[in-house]
Image (cartoon, rainbow, N blue to C red):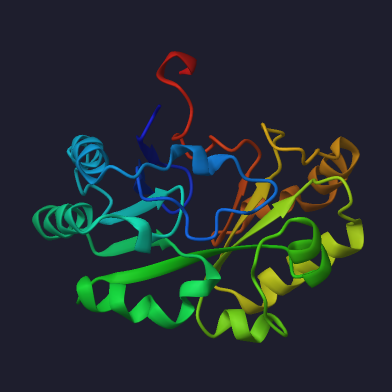
Length: 235
């Protein structure tokens, strides 16, 4: 598994894919990412320490992703990240968090006091019925304003059977108008029963590829486009 990479084309930063405890929700219908979870703290920390040794600090920015939320990273791993942030002069950190943790984000900000932190939240879609009744995301809110109050960066999912053009148009409009940053993930079929819609993906490509010109929006046409998550022999 590739766990360290550099994002060079837009918003240059280093990125690491770390091991973590199991996702506290772990029931999203489309996600097999949770298979990277572990329960053995020693094993998790040993892998993470090796991955974190790659950090150079050259871009002053580091993104940390794991198969859950930042809150599922062991304390020892968080301590190692903090040491590296201080020793390498990192000025900004990107972490992932489930919406359930929206009231606890300041715990991480306080822990990394003085460091600019951007929290990314996987909303997938602002269509509540599709997000929860089908995708089983477990993320409930009345409207985008509740999300924007806690998260300045969101992730959207595009190209799933059952999703519609109208849903996607609305999702993109909300992202562009109300969030500082965004990541759009094009759905890649995996080991789950959720199927992709290639016609919808082609429509999105024809109508929304221009978003690649936006400095604050990233499109992952493949789920390994950030350079982590694939296997070493696939390089």
